[in-house]
Image 1 (cartoon, helix red, strand yellow):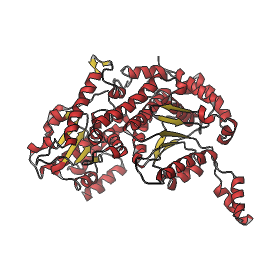
Image 2 (image 1 turned 180 degrees about the vertical axis):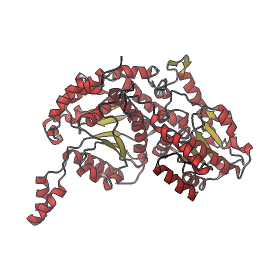
Image 3 (image 1 turned 180 degrees about the horizontal axis):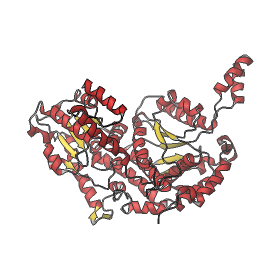
Image 4 (image 1 turned 90 degrees about the vertical axis):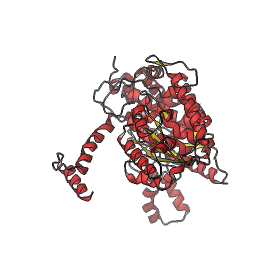
Length: 547
């Protein structure tokens, strides 16, 4: 039976009534009235600590939100996902990224296939291959060891591996430099090819079907570049693939033994745990890659077993529902206070917005309520000197997720204490703000004239009462990063269930691709008649004249 519209459910209506009171709350007052607020509204799981006390909620809010999760069937849908049921209904597929990080020997079958056996068979092959490359046993066609790895993919086949390799740079093999190419804009590939030596470069072509237009254009260009200095016999020593299309891979010149497969139940934005993670395993080694998987699995176990009220991904998801559907937030800012997480906000953009950026229910009915907010952000402290002005004093109230490691991977004195101080200070400033009275007192202390104080007062007042989460880890390691990514994956799942959308398809990326094929023919062919709107026809005509 399909669930009723979210906005018609009893618990949603109760939350609306509750919001009538909660919208008047001030976070300053909540902290003043609740001495144990930090302890009550925080949770530990899988090596992470979540402080969600700086959100405009109380115990009753959390109780009602957990009741909403139960009413919407989060627990049942969670079990359906873990058990391999085909919850991606528009594509009739299971959703089993969790199986990619399950320990060897875990029991799970899908359509009669032993999923765990298949997953670990590929992991074993990845280990053998990456050990050979990292040890220097794998040699290029002129007998030299690999020094550069170029991953060619797009979407989840690019964002995940690049983000993780950058985040775990301190664990990377010292001889290997990782490069990533995704954009069909030739400047992307050209910039990489200008820096690498074909004798010592390994290309990883990441495409499940081996037909993805952008990826195959870039792969073809890389192949032509390589063959300028080598014969086709040398291709298998320099090109491997993460794919399932054996025919396409071998026709390209890649040895089928160096094709690392994955399955249709692995969605692109959930694929970093699969053969798509091959560049990560090359960079950090198979043992550390297994630790990365183990961190994600630890969060899986917590998500599947912990009561909703103490369940970190569930609470993250429910807080997002509260901020989006009741407090009216249209976006969320991700603020990792760790330079190595500089691409984490980009990664979450795809994870959240491609998953839950939907306007119809799983049953195809138009939605009467808002779904995924826009996701954006940058590393602290850089963001403080860019867009934090809007977060503090802009007209929109935008929640923030602060993410920080307590310990640094470097030994530069003074930096980590400064970073931690800035992170904690910003979350406090968003919560507290600064009242006109406090501003006046400061300015009077500077002995400014009363007229100048009156003129400055509105500009220096901060409304505060702006919500945030803070996620702490001891160190940024493969394990803690795996746990962090899985936390957000499951948060997205919870919200998708509550909004009643299919979080695992992405039909919205298709239309532009279809139109682009036709326009490319018109740009490069002899077609004279252009059957588009006036604007598109005019742009094509200008481009044809320039090409």
